[in-house]
Amino acid sequence: MEQKVVKLSTIRQACSECNLFQLCLPVSLENDDVEMLDQIVQRRRPLARGEHLYRAHDEFNAIYAVRAGAIKTTMLSPEGEEQITGFHLPGEILGLDAISGSRHPCNAIALETTSVCEIPFDNLESLAAQIPGLQHTLLRIMSKEIFEDQEMLYAVAKRTAEERLAIALLSFSERFGRRGLSSRNFRLPMSRTDLANYLGLAPETMSRLFKRFQEQGLLHAEGKEVVLKDMDGLHELARARPVTEKDHRGGRHSKA
Image (cartoon, rainbow, N blue to C red; front, side, top):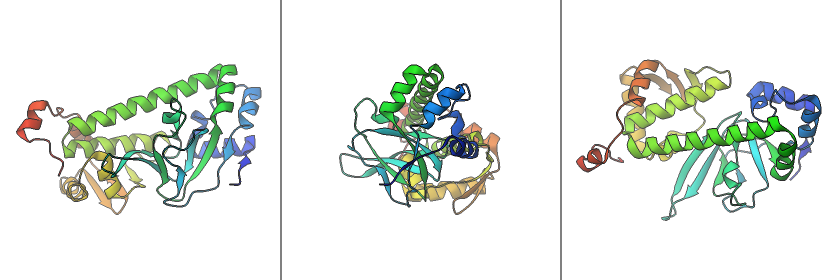
């Protein structure tokens, strides 16, 4: 597969467009450090929709930063069913979960035409030992990934269907806002079926939820385009009381 090293000027331009400068090119780095990092960052050819960036059990060699497009990560359940474990938007890093095991535990699949920057991990690890700013950034990214994964696992396990969707929409809102885009009006790159899978819901439940949220004035949705109209209402739903074991026994939480 043809790859090329990205020149510093190209990296700076790309990062200014997708906020990667806060992830791959920390502003605290000195010019000499930036030049060192420049030598290891590579631009992958664009992935077509449905194409794998890597597959489960592939050898771990690099982490990846999404430049444009979006990627979903998936695993197979013991029954052989696909379970979506995450969605990765521009400016976000993936592949970190393979560091400890030296092999990727999941599949990474493009949701649409997607461009990524590849950062060989051996080289990055060596650089991080020399550049305190880079090491700090890597640790910050890893910590944030762990926190967000735990937060979503808790939401799926302990919340009602309405609460899960509200939490997910607010998460996407925050992530788009972090890129300098609108936090209220955005396009979700995944299908509703994929979103339902991610939240542990049936596709028909997801369709009903979007219709219900629209009727309640919480949002307006047309295809993948979403406008969040009542942020306070969504936050109120997201902060609702978590489901308890008693609620489970009483049938409050169901996977429709």
